[in-house]
Length: 260
Image 1 (cartoon, rainbow, N blue to C red):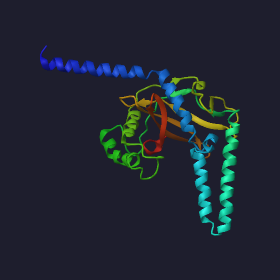
Image 2: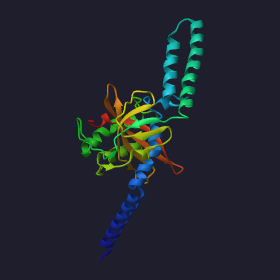
Image 3: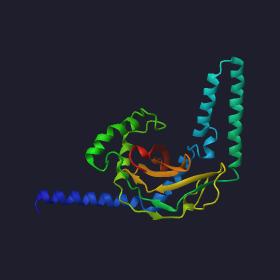
Image 4: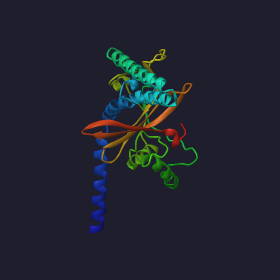
């Protein structure tokens, strides 16, 4: 065998070894564990989760911002001072009540007992085609690198865009699982169709399979839930590995790249 052919063979062996090694890192059990660890963190940021209104979390900050805007609009200085006291007292009451309640009960999350493989549905262009992906990349870059439209809570970086591409080209299959495997933190999962009308219930829809970058330090899966008159909203959920723990990073609405 000549030197060129030998080099090609060695490169092929290296690629196959790398692919095999990577796939072993993300067996289905590990994938479920990673989703369990990060999904509860994502739910803590959702305004549909009562846990989000604990002090320091996203829902609490949203309420605080709304109250402050109301105070700014008030012209009477004495009235403003009264509203400040109302703001502090009411937010503290909400936060403390929820924290106390969650010591003895869980938030029930209703969801389907299947981890779905994402099936990309093109809208105006087909992002599976290189030319369409390249044309749309600049728009994704505006969100991920510059956050021009404030779709993300923070600038998370260009490297996460590739995880959307990996989801678009994902070839995995749907897999049944026990939703109880997702129980974590304030949340317990169920497939039940019982009434879900109180503040300690979250009407979810589906969780989707995860993809990861080559170094297995960043990942992405999708999550959908009932919103706006029982319609379904869905987002890409971005995660990263930090000191051997997987943490939630941010979400990105899937309708921007596909048709739900």
